[in-house]
Length: 171
Image (tube, rainbow, N blue to C red; front, side, top):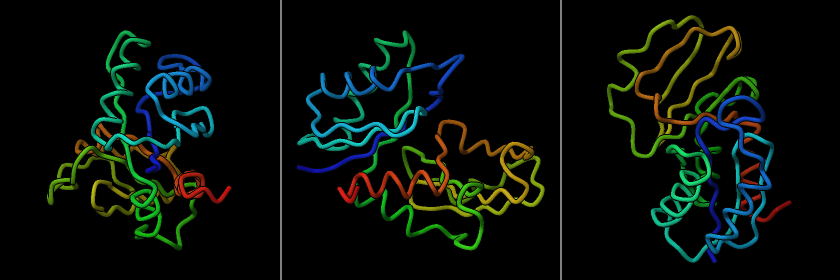
C-alpha cells in the first residue's frame, strides 16, 4: 500500500491553528488511512492509503475544514517524493535546521522568485513543487517575503529527513 506524508499549513502547538496531533491521527484513521504516525506537533503525518494523492488530500482537507471551521491547506507527497525533496536540497552545506523546503501544490512559476522582498543573505532555488530557502541568519531574523510561497508550508531539512525515514519505514 502506498505511503504518504501530509504537511498541514498553519498548524502549531498553541494559539491560532492549534490542532492536537491525537486529533490529526484520529482524522486520518477515520479517512481509512493505515499505519498513521504523527511527527512533532506542527502538522506532519505519515500513513498508508490505497487512495491516490489527490484523493488523500481531499479527504484530509474535508476533515480538517470540519474540525477547524475554515479551510486548512495540506501538501501531500508520496514516500518517494519526500525522499526526492530531501535529496534535491540545493544547499547541502547549509545548516539543515535553517534550510527549508516550502511545499507547494504545484510547480512554482519560473519567475516565482522575481517578486521577493526583504532578502538579506538568504539563498533560494526552485524545486519540482517546492521552493528551497537557506536562511543564513536564521528564519527568526529574516525579513524575506516570497509571494509565490504564500499558500505553501515550510519544513526544515531535519524534519524532511525524519519524515522521509518514517515514510520509508526505516524507523
